[in-house]
Image (tube, rainbow, N blue to C red; front, side, top):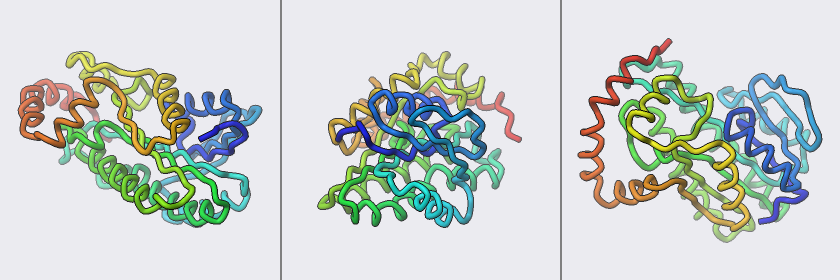
Length: 259
């Protein structure tokens, strides 16, 4: 898939990975339309910033308006996401609703809107940024894992549904990444457990590489890719590893403040 002279709608382009992606796409010669709830950065060459709330109940209508305003869009990258490190009983209902709306529902509505358009034009790409936690259930991230498991399943089914169409459907699963989304407790937990964290720029590079190669899925990081495979084949072994980490996870989980 070529990137030069393409026009991408980048959902969640103001976060760590999203910002790095916008810069990488521009460097590759693409134009980027970046959405956020409150766009406040100055526009620059080849980057347009628009307001879009992915948790809005009328997101389908807002996508139609945006699409009408930018008919040249021929690719969408869903990089938006909410994350909460919290015990399930500590999750406020509103936080749970917002997490599912942004991480999963919005991705489904994006595909629902753009697939018919890309079919008509004969070209298009749908790229979904998931997570290692979309394949491995992790304590303290039950709701986040549920949303990312759902996103992975949706992207997989959609790719097979569109296998005979001239559309690219790609799912990329980064491991832990150094972004402002991580709380102090999450950063401390990763450091204690020795979990490696990638830079947003490294993740963006891998995403663009997968797009260039027309891949359908790409899992980032080692040994994370191995544990994804192991969890699919022998989940009881991963259960035991998680059980050994549980006291450490609970120690940091109990320091997290949930408003």
